[in-house]
Length: 316
Image (tube, rainbow, N blue to C red; front, side):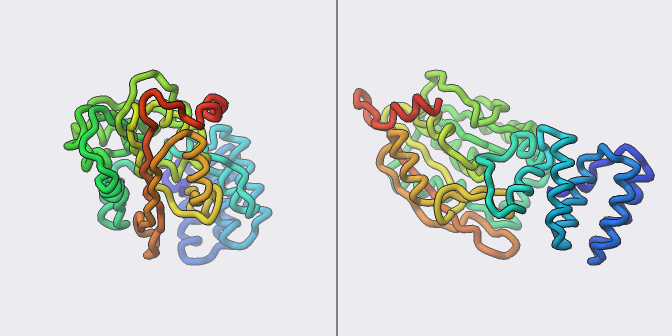
């Protein structure tokens, strides 16, 4: 994420930042770093400026300096709205974060909301909602009395699902995205929440979908536990993830990829059945295909114990 547009609060520092940006755009990274450093002398508590300094140090191959700048960001903003922690993880080559900071995800999508639909569908060829619905159809899905769209964003999943649901709810962390979704009139209920902190309330859903949110969650144990505990008997869970080699891996894009084995073990531990995993291309990124998995599974029949109940209780 770029901190361009974030003012330091000091006009002189902002002018130096603008000049540094022009230098960086022309490939003069050394002078750009020097000018931005001088701007930070004027505004030493400007987290966005330190974040950009780290970005330019990294581009120049100065990893130690980049890490120092991003650690300064974390010292100034413990919520990590700019995602500096993920950059530090990636810099070390051994990511340790299991998820991205909620403040970063919220800030990212609040900024992205006004152009989200056009960017994903027109420029990036985003197809996850359509692919999920196709996978549900192959699994025999016809209609849900109650459905929940996790990470609903602007409602792209809701657009393809609305006609197949009696009641449709949506949850997202970004107020900006929720405002766009509300404007489409697709959802019966929208809520601003972190899907990793949802509590099982007994409402019960025949269908839970997650089109483009698990890539920002990372470790899925808690949210899958919520899904398993919130599905009605034989209710379906359908979601998309970026395809990884194994486990959970944070990519340079600051999105997570998930491996087949990790997903299979997790869903089995949650007591979910009938798992189907379909290889697909979710969208484009810089002209390259982003390969993913579409997963559909279901809760067991009523009256039958879930093998994963003990594991779920430990997670929840």
